[in-house]
Image 1 (tube, rainbow, N blue to C red):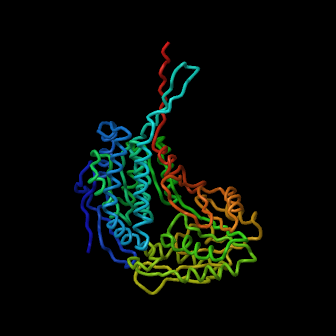
Image 2: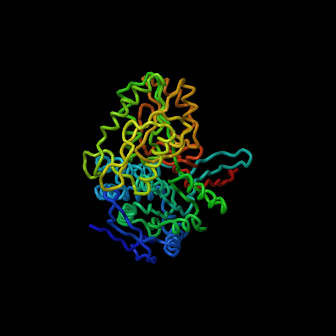
Image 3: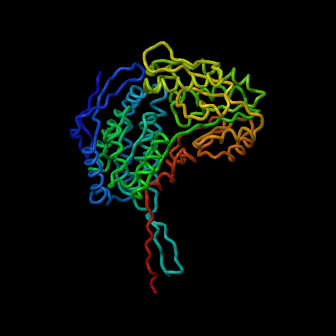
Length: 483
């Protein structure tokens, strides 16, 4: 059934979009269009930002206490939870992620972000009071809401990325203009329905789908106090430059090129299935934290390659609505061609395709789960963020060599260490310049744990108290001591 939306969610109502342009929504498992939504331009963006500005400056939201904001977030989480099946169905259909994990990994975890920030807000103190001996005064250190926040997220985490930002922004007392990805806008409409049912004051949450032009207008809007973005490093750099020109804030979660360091004592039965899932199956390989570069001791190279290839070859590929399928399609035909081109370049440079390497003969935008061996870290395949179901095995001679290879990238988002000795693994982890290190594949987007990267992987942190701090300014109020 085709899904068509003609409205945007602005100022607490679903109103007809002003634009006549449309965005086509394509099912990557079939290659067929199954929906359309408005492609908002400057007019729709301006009214969404205007509603958020008014709600922040003059509306009821800025009068809400922390406990009242927490109660509103609780209601929002409840409404999101009521739509769990709808969200899971939409994400599987729009993004091609396996239905076997969508309801839990993409929906359930995202809703926990909202509940976490509700609890954090409810328990927060209004101010940290410090004594100033120089001023002979009590000083109230307050965290004030930053203002209007523009939230832009990619198709590979349509709800996780949205709620990690929206929940923190609302908990801080900000208002939001949320622009979902053009590939996954239907998830955005479900979020708007949940927000509407939760009864937020008008203008607190606004949802507008847009393509490139509308997105650029939103990012550059002078009434937007902060841009919270997840996506490519190239776009993130452009956003940073745009915001810096007006001294507006930004938080950027960008690309990754993770290295999985397999130490010489790592159990084969742990490494092979673990990296098949975290390197290939996770979001069909389309995840910034996917463990793509697998660094192995040279004297264990062949056995690890063989075991990994067997585990990857055994991953069920197919229709993501099939509950037995683990690996679905890539997001588009163009992206499939980019991934296949990465593989072809790697072969030309001397890499060996051990398993996979091509596109299966079926409808949709599929790439076979692929393991490449004989890879060196200077190859294009090892330096670029491939963003597909492809892992590269790179041999190293010493642990020092492995640490050097792992750090030989512009990114610093995540990495993993695999070892039978957890203490030794943690010592190696501490030497890596990345935001998150997963020992033996222990990985989770926990709402209480900050997430983000070093270097070209971004600026700022999401989740945890650190994620809340991104959406606040600090104010100091000096109250003279009496007597």
